[in-house]
Image (cartoon, rainbow, N blue to C red; front, side):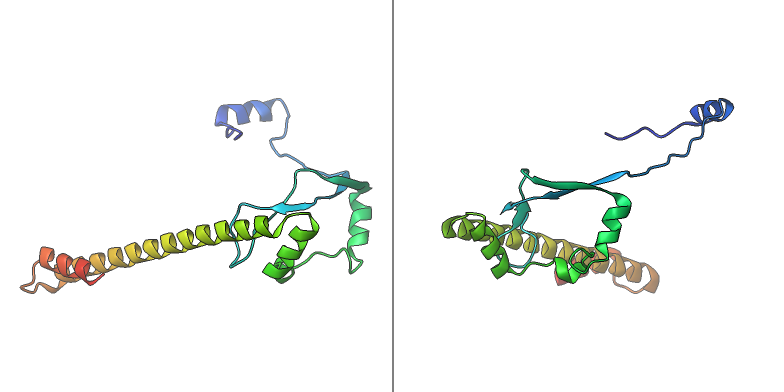
Length: 164
């Protein structure tokens, strides 16, 4: 739910009553949880089955933020960069098999994701073509307006739209 913006009247009331309009956020504890993987629905990636995290989790423990950050200096707990967040398709399949999914379920999820990826790719290509056609039309209209040649604006626009 969106928080409505504070209007000037409310801001003046806060200042008059001595309340600050600035917020401060702090964290006391970090809950460490382990989530099992499950078949996902988001077809991100280039190929293979999509992964998601299950809603079910196992609580590992609670630590203060300071203690948690101290452990992050350990190579096993450090932040990963984007390259390390990518999971290759073969490894995803292995994770799903260890989680109890059958070859049929994994194959079906891979096929559904491939269909959605193709639809997204076609939609993107269609948007690119529309953008190029619009730019060509705008360019042709500008040229027709600026050149003052015998070619009329409608003819220039027709020519530009038939090129794409």
